Length: 222
Length: 222
DNA sequence: CATTTCCTTACGGAAAACCATAAGCACAAA
DNA sequence: TTTGTGCTTATGGTTTTCCGTAAGGAAATG
Image 1 (cartoon, each protein chain N blue to C red):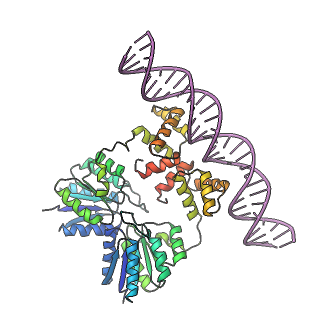
Image 2: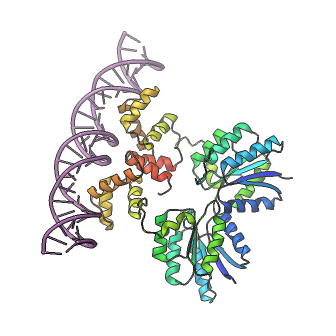
Image 3: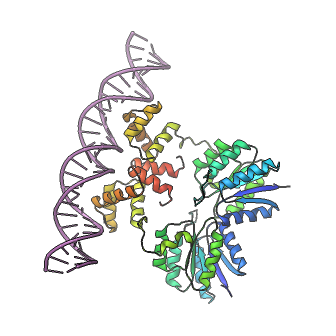
């Protein structure tokens, strides 16, 4: 036995095709595809109304924008809404992104069932993932399997994330101080913010604020 | 009639598969694949020694690094060496990258025969590209067809990319000036670099250098 | 040949970031 | 109570970034 009804969500038709091949190997006949997150969610809703829920959803994370207006713009958005409305649906993420923090946050926030890195042998791993998930076992590509181990090294608190986000957002340290004062976020003095950033720079071995933002962005923390 | 012997170069096995499907539609039987640029070049050399040159090469631009040491690290490197040693071999680039400047430089430097954007209907366009190239006509995906028309102001050049990259790398503007002087990259005075960054900030509507780096990173330009 | 235009470079002042030091305060241990 | 510790905040000085202005040179225009 295997999954019966599967939805593939990826903007690249090529990838869709590749995934299709993998599913064919499992002799899954009932396969749907979507190139936009909005379409995908519609299909999921429709399936639910017809009492024919999907057994499995395989989705990418990043979707290129084009002329179409989209309500759900990213795979993460799609996952969020699906796991909220139909939490029992298994989801496999199939993405180029191999940042541990990203994987970790998807697992923690949405309890995704598998994360497969599109890579040299992505389709082989995808195949393994489908098998695992069918057996109710979580699957992670080897490159990102470390996402589960605690590794508190990378851990930084919400406050720091917010701080760096605002930096990346173009605010000066002075403006961030003002913003935090309005939000009743503490610490919020310019001096404290300077100190905090200094600590983060040391922690991430960054030469300056620009470098820090670049590093943290690469890690997928913001 | 159609191409007889084709080489596909892409690190993602999925994409390789997708391209394979397209080629099958043309009933091309003699298809080779490579997941590393080094392997690809070896195959090309071997084919030449055996007097059985490839009629067509379809290649990606970016290749993820893994444990293997590679001499040729990018698709551009591969194109460069192939067009130098076997300039008559048609090359189709099939890439996610849709920056006009990139496309333009590949056309000008190496006279590539087609540039197809991996996208929602990438495989359809790839199919068109193969047909065009077989008829000795150049092909560009619609998104990048403007690459041929003279410079549009929105474009960002290689120099700017390098500049922002170094910023993201943690160098101060003064250090970048020094670096560029060593590299004989011009302009390289601190003043020019300031001015250039100012222009980029305006162009990308960034408040400051941090913001600029964040924006450009989000756009995937660096 | 003179003039215009474009680009690189230089310079100086203002703003922001960076850095060290110290004061103020809460809280827990002695 | 006193002491020590840890955190926020304050202050001042140095460096870097930001921004306007202008000088110098090369290529293009007339």
